[in-house]
Length: 394
Image (cartoon, rainbow, N blue to C red):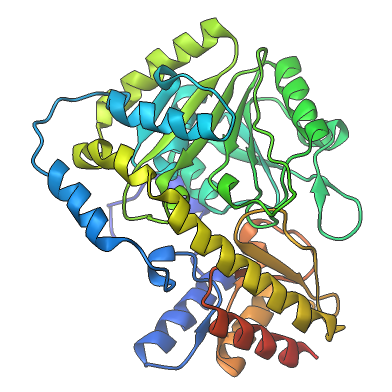
């Protein structure tokens, strides 16, 4: 490149990592037309669900040519429709405390801009969603993983001790994903209490990613993170609520002490006004689109339940793999006590068994061998793929 250079923020990227090798092999096999079962499919629009396409097209045909009136926080009608969705779950929020963004990654970027200076840190759960690594890198923010306690199986639990062990100077916020991606763990009331007490004591904010909150298992109680003392920013969006990632609309809800909520809202409005990234047509369509959510979510939940039943039956016959039933979300984490390396296992499965999976290390697991599978994979592919995995490690 000669005298030309890129930003130093990219120096931390390891483009030769095992994860990159796995993705490269997957791309080559697809280009060759190889028959590979993709057990990572997380895009509902490519997973065989039935969408009310005519209604969706009709909705957008009515909103496509609207006049443009910039609303930095988002159109009031859109924010009111979102607030109504929360009210239907029993959580009353104010539409004026919502800020729209084009996706959850942009929502994270807004919050990192709001809360952090370059070099500051955000505590994040490990395991967790790899998107955060890139969002933080692009904002020059450090991530500090905190490791919840694991009391048997793979069900981690956040405790005051687990938070204090990971705390360090320069932390401006603590993130939590609920249900967790990929473990599916849903926060217990005592975990929420630990988080809010920790944040209040240290004078930091809580960032909650609840994009999978509509996919909790029957009987699992989902409790939103709220606090009158510590600032809480909650991220969600239509990618999971509607199973429509192509409809680029997410949001941040601001909660906490009233004076902080007002000040944070004003600053987030300035950030959003700089980009104005959420499509006007999408915002205008949002009230009607959100009314379709129950039919789409019902299909996704049914698929998840069928795949979980298939996994339970297959895993009962196999001693080489273990799993903890998820409490929410649409991922399944398999643990292989006798296998030394999950990236090597994922690559071998791809090349030798024709099954594409994600290694646990991609999600921040630091030890053991784990694979992460998508529970919204079409049932036939999921069952056959899992069968191949279990036969491979037997």
